[in-house]
View (cartoon, rainbow, N blue to C red):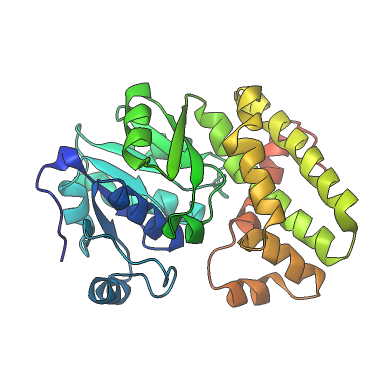
Length: 309
């Protein structure tokens, strides 16, 4: 099923066929990269292959000609030096464990997963080092991005942080084109902390707006939320300046203020009296902030960081 270049150095495998994985696979292919998309649901992959679009998550985003579909995880990993993991935070460790037997010293691994691991309070790069070690180049993609808009090719900017600067620079260059710009950072902890905490703050902002508390309260939550996020990140070893960039305040404002945000919609629905389970079923996709809320609280308490929101 896959239609990718046989040279693993010229191609990339995106692991995770949800809305975000699909959008990034489309963008990589659009930017000229030979790309394949793998997902756990083989029936969904068959549908994607047949219609050349992800009918379930991004029905209005047709696949570029260079984007292939690969149903075998082993084949996807073995045939590509560069891997981009796009799964929810609670599934991140499991997928790393599944690909570990197929990884060799030549691989480079990136992810667009956001959030602290619930059971350990670890950031994604720490989970990756747990499972596959710290010998391979690692990178994270984060920032103010909605999958639907990336899929539609609307102008977008994001951040790539990497353990090896050359890998981050190359990845940023490969995913960028005239309408999509990736900036680089060396602050793994800051970029990942921003991506984890902003989802919780978006639920809080949604609750506030749903209760009719108004614009004053909304901006107070966003501004003080940025202060909380920064305090936590700096305590974990991040650079303060990171939180004033795309992966910090950029992602925070986007997620708190636009109804495309699942986390904001969760907050709005909770304010209307619905339960978390009811809203999650209605949205039909993972709402990361629900998982992140407990984890962020535990990490904050463990580091004696005040985060009242």
